[in-house]
Image (tube, rainbow, N blue to C red; front, side, top):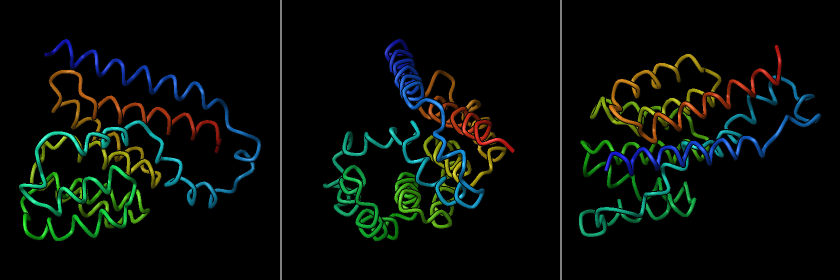
Amino acid sequence: MIHATASAALLGVMVAAATYAAIGPASQEQARRTPADVVAGRATETEGWPICGAMESMTAGVDWARLDPDFAAGKKLLAAGDWTGAIAALTPAALRDARNADLQLHLGYAYRRSHQLDAAFRHYRQALTLNPRHRGAHAHMGEAFLAIGQPERAQEHLAALERICLIACEEYDGLKAAMAADRARRLAEGP
């Protein structure tokens, strides 16, 4: 089991490294962007970071349709990339099950992908209030901090994941890779 987990984590890191290697240096157009353009485009750029891949497992596992049809519908809409539909489906489920950190994580993710970062942070914080050791909430909140240009706050969540993950975990590896990509992007943009 541990070997399989470690192998999966290593594969994820290798895929992320290959993706970053394929992206290559910033184009001349990117180099001419103003700071306002950079901030405005940052949320869109972060959508391709590896941590978002952690949400691909949304339709696997528990038969949520039997437990909560809105949660099940919301997870399917997330997997399909329908952020607005996912928010509409997950919100009533979260109202019925106010102590479910996973619901809060999924809502936060949908809001972040729809570029509503204030709402995303609110739901990530709620997930962490319900479960301070929630790996997904730490990882996604760290990535949201990167999206708004606060890498030091993302580092806090990476440190929390390092304490939580006793063995290699996808959330730690994904946030670490996203932070490295953000650091490289900032260095390429210069002062």
